[in-house]
Image (tube, rainbow, N blue to C red; front, side, top):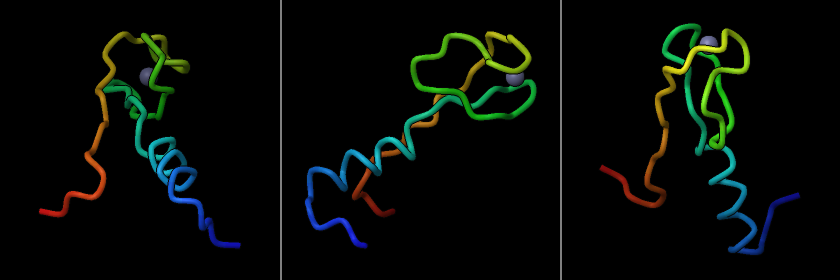
Length: 55
Ligand SMILES: [Zn+2]
């Protein structure tokens, strides 16, 4: 079932893209995380990509 609501679709896309990646073990962490949930390392890389901009 496709999402027709533009606002909901935008939220869904943000949820998929906005997360942090641990530089030590490489797993995904929630955007609110300050440290890795797996290895507890505090080296998290932010993975934020601008939506709708194609380069
Ligand atoms: Zn980690």
